[in-house]
Image (cartoon, rainbow, N blue to C red):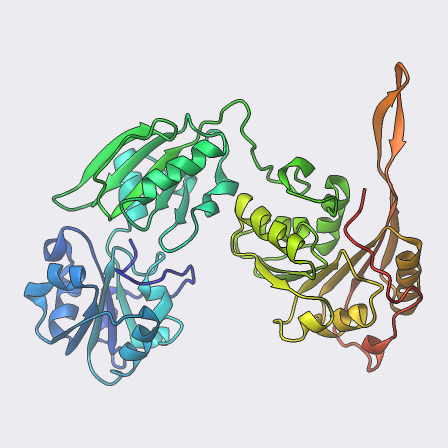
Length: 450
């Protein structure tokens, strides 16, 4: 479980062995402690606590280890953002940090790893909340989705709600399981079986089982995880694992890159682990949202000039399980000036506005991908000129759907989409990024793809 009052991160760090505690230069020990307190600690962990001149931790952790602490006990400062600086300030002394369970699993150890080199640190983990929960449920941990909603939106569970899936979710407090059950019920997963596991590993441990739709548990301990066996109602909206979500899942005023075109657009953008996308002229945010759904490591920034559409982007991101989508309300290219450098850019609106394509080409990392969709003749002319100057791929995409024709059925063609996809050279020639926009300046092509 997470350290009391500490934000959690996913960053991995090297975990050393007990023998490392004696190595020179390792001034910081990070010790995981469970609800069984000092009795559950290894000899190496007990020795690290006893030898420390300063021991940091949540008040509960300091109480659990109290009999072993010989140095100064320091509760975490508030706000926690200053805690890492307080620990680093003690470099040169023997310092111990106490954390719940495995410090490197959504815990303070991963946070400190950003500030203290691994060869200065000894990490002594206890069983994680996820490991304990899997053991109690008799589940194979490698087959379970593990998520933390401690200080994070519950909406993060949304992409993982598939019939037959098993999830273990760490919550923030005693109200977390009920809120999780309400969210699942609203999404059509009311029959799912929920087991609330409280104070795992200690004398107050308790397991209780109910369903999301019939959730009736009360007086839930603040230290809890929820084990979920997902069952869907007949009408549940299950998010596919591939790109091209149904259009009906998005709130839209019509400015939406439609399903088939969106799938091809994501294919052209070719997301890779850890990358950042700019979704320029985001409309309903569909491309940025699906980019983030492709992998938890991916990030996206949606840039949208209209406040009403920006609101839709935010609601869509929350509803579809990517609340971390960053939204910038403003018009390109001005709104792009201070953003972090992107690995990929999609321009769904504003390609004919002066300076937009120049700005995104200049900002894009070498080797980064740019994809621009056009539905108007004016924007198509701009893309043709860029293709002539830079190369890449210029394709025409056309979708037709069956529709009634009198008493029979015929094909009704949607508006064609012209797509320019380009990869920035690893060593772009000077001046390549400064080519002026072509005809149609001042026109605005939006996400009104078929």
